[in-house]
Length: 115
Image (cartoon, rainbow, N blue to C red; front, top):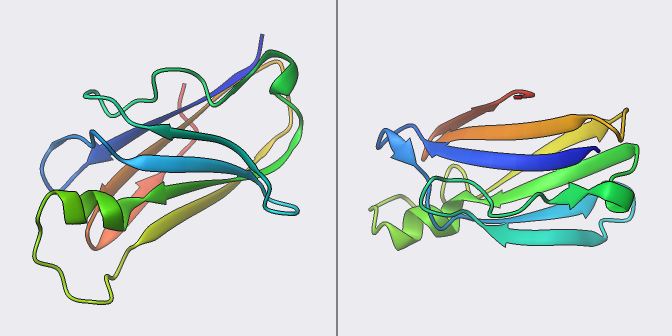
């Protein structure tokens, strides 16, 4: 059974990004499909998509990096260099596991298809 999961690591602090809000949107039409907040391990407690909800298509994962850094009390310039981090990706095989890790700091991020 296919599923979509996410994980966020705070590379500036060298630890999981606990308490970061994220939203999953359909890329076409921007309809919100799911929302979550990362747990103490920087992961969502449940898959963002699974089973019948897992469909081929393009999606946007929107991570609230700016809000996360605000809650840490970081003294960052306004406007922030990174506020919302949007990762547009595609699901070709709805029976596969898609994992989207985000490695983030106030001034940069990277991502890849994880396992």
